[in-house]
Structure formats: structure tokens, C-alpha cells
Length: 163
Image: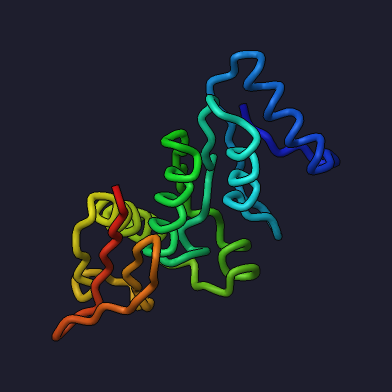
């Protein structure tokens, strides 16, 4: 069930999520639009539900670094006790360039690269940034600290989670 209805108050959205869970819906999703991020809202919905799966319908890859998306998705999955799913997309030129200030260049290549980096991060693998087209600062994260990790020739991302 997509949960983004224009005109609904935040209280009504939370109540709708709880009702959807009570009625047996299997999942809730929220996308991002002008001025609204999905993750903040989904974190609150995860806190008021316990069984229904919660995820993004589409989050544009141009809006965040791949390391940031990986950290956020993995933390959402931990906070929701395994109920989170991540939906990615490229969005469009207007949103990417006018709202996010990024050049809308090679969207499919960028999407593939993000998926590759997020999958590696989820497996706890080291990412060699020199092999990727993106030139953003990539950080390594544990749930207890944030630190930069720099190899001899590349920045590396390593997501480490306590078990």
C-alpha cells in the first residue's frame, strides 16, 4: 500500500499505517517528492507498527551518495527489525537538477553503480572508489562511530554492524 496522500495530516498517516497492519496489509511504501524524504517518515511508521513491511517506493539515487543510502537503508532495516525494503529510481531532470543541484547525467549507469555499491556495503565488503565514476566522499560507519577510511589510492567504504 502506497502511503502518501495529499492533504493527510501526519497523525492520519500514522493511524492509516496502524490500521493497514491490523487489516492484514503486507507492506507500506512511501516515495520522495519535492521537500519530503521517505526515510524520516518510514522510521516513525516502523515505530508504531510491528509486522507490516515498510519501504521506499522510489528514492532517487541522485539525491544522496551511495554510502549514505546504504547506511540509511541498513539502519532502517535494523530499526524495523528486518521489515525494511529499499526501492530506488533515477527521478527526472527537473527534480535532480533544480531541487538537488546535480547534473542529470547517465541515469542508468549511475543507478547500476549505486546498486553495486549498496549491495557490497550490505555484505560488509570494502568498496574501492577508484573503480567507480562517483567522486563523492565515502565514509565507513559502524553503529557506534563514523570515520573516514582512506587507502593508499582510494577512499573505501566499510559498513560494519554489531550482531
